[in-house]
Image (cartoon, rainbow, N blue to C red):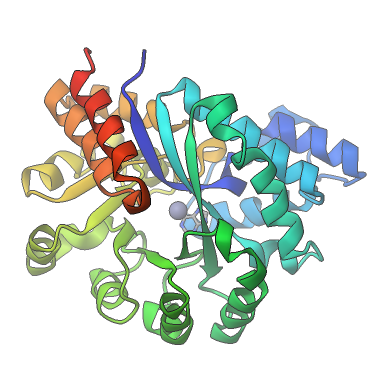
Amino acid sequence: MPLPKAELHLHIEGTLEPELAFELAARNGVELPYADTDELRKAYDFEDLQSFLNLYYELMAVLRTERDFEDLANAYLARAAAQGVRHAEIFFDPQAHIARGVAMGTVVEGLWRALGESEARHGVSTQLIMCFLRDESAGSALRTLEAAKPYLDRIVGVGLDSAEVGHPPVKFREVYEAAAALGLRRVAHAGEEGPPAYITEALDVLGVERIDHGLRCVEDPALVERLVRERVPLTLCPLSNVRLRTVDVLADHPLPAMLDAGLLCTVNSDDPAYFGGYAGDNFDAVRSALGLGEERLRELARNSFLASFLEHDEERRARYLAEVDAYRF
Ligand code: ADE
Ligand code: ZN
């Protein structure tokens, strides 16, 4: 039995496995510029975040109907459950779909068909976080929040993703203020490729409660001290960092030093279909490459539930934490 954990940094579009991509392409009459899954997998040799994003957005062309989004989410939830995920807070990128003529309602209703029965079917509780694409305009983000208003009972919070450098958090001040006024939780990618100052700005200007990635905080000791003091969770994604070349090899990942510094780190999969592994694979990888002991792994699992947005159901959080404490490696 795998260690129970929560997944807090997972882009549902990044769970599109090549096999499902071809299946959906055939179902929807979409032509992919790859002969087969082997040829597609060969394109997964990324140089940086942008080279990944190019493929990530290209493959979204196969996602067209509610059923497509339902199938995508069900496939992810089955894999996550098999790797010990008990709770998942799932990002989605509506602007990337709306731009292709796929409505917000199609995306949310489709995902919800799978999420609504996830506990019964997969034993995984779920929440949805809508991300804004930071390389699109602030106005586009505001229009996206407007389009989400009929679905806010299904969306727990907002996030910020896509190409980071040159798109600082402050660009999205207004839409984050509007999201807060609607009672939405706030997170943002920061310090993945962008500088540590983006982490500070996400906290101070956007009011985020968690930082997605946040890896580059290690370059600024005063910032690390603040993150420790304020108990700001970081949703790290070790296999993603290697595949996107933020870190040369996994053995060089700063996770052990970050834990030693007292940071509230969690381990997540980001875009598991593209980066070589789901949540449990990321745990296994850091265990073997970084020599993390059982108590460190248990700490990471505890952190994932502590950092999750389960305030509406503290009994559930306590149950998950008890499962982690009782876990025998
Ligand atoms: N969109 C999907 N994965 C992402 C990542 N790792 N960083 C920024 N945007 C993303
Ligand atoms: Zn991400």
